[in-house]
Length: 251
Image 1: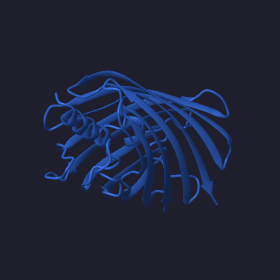
Image 2: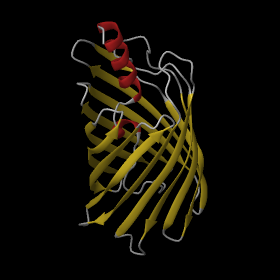
Image 3: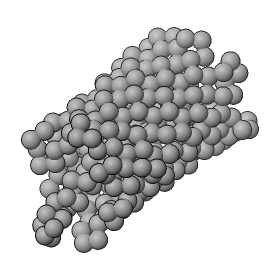
Image 4: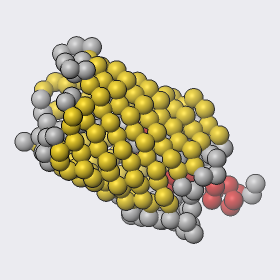
């Protein structure tokens, strides 16, 4: 493979395979609305893979919720990335994602249905690319099932992504799913673990194990440590990622 082709390949991979921690925020209480109508998440993720890409991504997520048994939610994700390969590097804003849809609660169980649009706000011409240069669209559903005392939980997600082909960084459509289980281990701590993975229309796939520990010092804030460890990948690089998430519940 010549140098120009190698750089192009790595740029496409960087734009589309930043790591599960950065692209999928599946979490404790995945489908549960926040305790207040507004929340702000600040996230830092660092990932590295088997084709020598290293990506640091900071992300702010602004959340808005309504209702209890039935309601609506909106999420706005604003990423900023620093990506490096052996010979190139790029720093700047990534692609913005807007997610919204109905949500609800039946007893202690909560669910959400959502649509999302990823906008080409990141620079697609850098090497590695900071953005895909295309519009992607998602439909998905998420569920959080809790025991009556909320001590134990199970979380699940199924999501389908349709990509805009014919761009500088094309990608096939993709189906993603995740299952995580866990619960409280103290009055201030909670942990879950499970699996997340995807397969696209070209048969490329990955399977990753995820573990999350949450520390809740007060009703208004919590901090999480997230670890993703690759299990298997087909025609995709294996990506390991570690992240820290801070959440503020805005009164």
